[in-house]
Amino acid sequence: MNDTATSFSRRHFLTQASCFGAFSVLAHTFTLPAMAGSLTDDPRISQTPLVDAGFASVRGIGEGLYATVSDTTKGFKTICNGGFLIGRDSALLLEGFGTSAGAAFQWDALRKVTQVPVIGALDTHYHFDHSLGNAFYGAHGIQLWGHASVSRRIIESYLPLQGADRAATLASYEKRVQDAKSDSQKQRAQGDLAAITSIFDLANASALTLPNRPLAPAKLPITMDLGHFPIVLESYPGHSGTDVIVRVPEQRVVFAGDLLFNGMYPVCFDEKATVAGWRATLKTFASWDKDTIFVPGHGQVCGQEGIQRLRDVFDDISEQAEKLHKAGVPANEAAERYVIPEKYKNLGIFAWGFSIGPAIVKLYKEWSTS
Image (tube, rainbow, N blue to C red; front, side, top):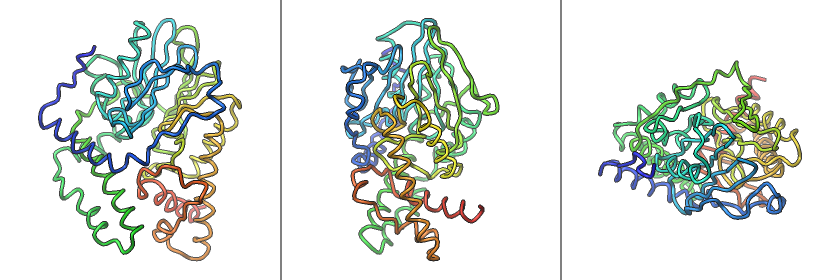
């Protein structure tokens, strides 16, 4: 399987190189924090990675459970976190990642451990960094799983970008950089431009491949047995409207996808994102066992302290936004006036217009309809 069906054309290679150039602007915002001290002595977590390629490493976090953790300061093949679960009878892969090479990396790691049949690969949601590498799985006959809306959202979001005029697509973002009236506005506009440039270029470098096993949310949660231990697939609101997590109750391990950002501000740009729903989801996560291990969509593997930190971040965004709302400040202006507290200065921000800004705008809308 080392011949990973990623024999890119020259055009494909150049497009990826351009994309990674844009991502390099954002790389510092994804700096991987150290694993929490509470987990370094947890016997479920392997002290030595199964494999470490720099851009991502794979580490055991339980019996038959492995987390793939990305470090985008060292490369962009995976971008997000993922993992795999291995039972006696079968295995399940998590995430298509941002590139086919990222999915291939995880497949190779799985095959270092086991040769049991792989029943599928799950996209925890449709966003580019979790799904644009699906082509690797498709090329190797691996069934793709995802929320029933994932395929439609991939087509709506990324198909229009393929073959689109690059300059025209980026023009409004470039104009915001040119029209910025302060250094902070310019910096934020540059971050948004780098983000949309990366998404555009990755979409054009990818063969869109859609899940062929849709998971109807009305039928979730689903419990299945890989042989040796049961796992539960559950859907929760918050990040994208297509979020599915994988929980292993007997081992107190949760693969949370982007419903959890560890060491980063939450990304809230999606039209289906809901701050109220996300905060309710985090409250549910916090109700689970205090020794639960969470694999976030981005950032280091964490325990309940990671859940609490993200809840606190949402509280802070809400508190600041509410003061501005009561003062009559318009939503778009409030989205620019949020002040990062000193205690959160080290948290990463993918891009202001994809995280903090839309979170505040969504809060305003939620308050106006409540």
